[in-house]
Length: 225
Image 1 (spheres, rainbow, N blue to C red):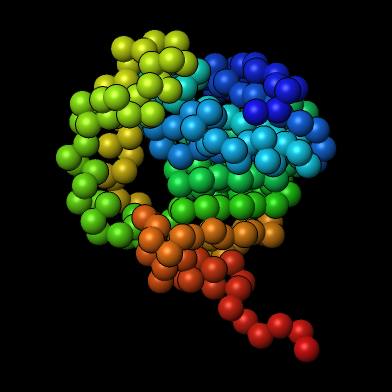
Image 2: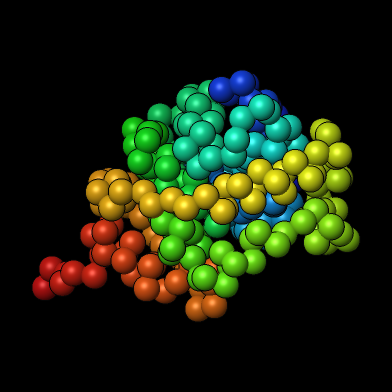
């Protein structure tokens, strides 16, 4: 991690949201994936902080951000991030979201376009059927015990204000992941921020879905000769 790390909390929407600031420069908000913490994003944070001011966030119920009495939803977490950007007095910020964080980043761009400068979305979809069926079939089988001894459980137990809440996080994440969703294509097509999509060749996201989202964002057309 960067030597210049500032960890803090912001009161947003009834949530005590934990964030860290690494480096300096144009602000970039980093949003982790499901069950993760900032630390589990690994070398991405210090690498980006060499050139940017990275605001790494731990979303509702994850890491140092204690859960509150509301469901986990992409829309509510997006509202939290928009409120954080306002709290930090940034006119705009770039967003980089991975997996669940990518869905949150998309919703920030849809619901709060005025705070988004550029967008990077890695391993995320805008409909539940954008994910491979094997993933959707696996999610209902998850239990807290399935994470026993894993880096995910270890990071949670090490950093969470209420370590005994891990089963609650698993239950809420399962509800989020099992609830079918399909954000309107016009919402994706209406994202004005320049957007980079990142999808691996063996990703949880179907490549066909990634291409569909790419086209909705204006990609896949003939360039200017």
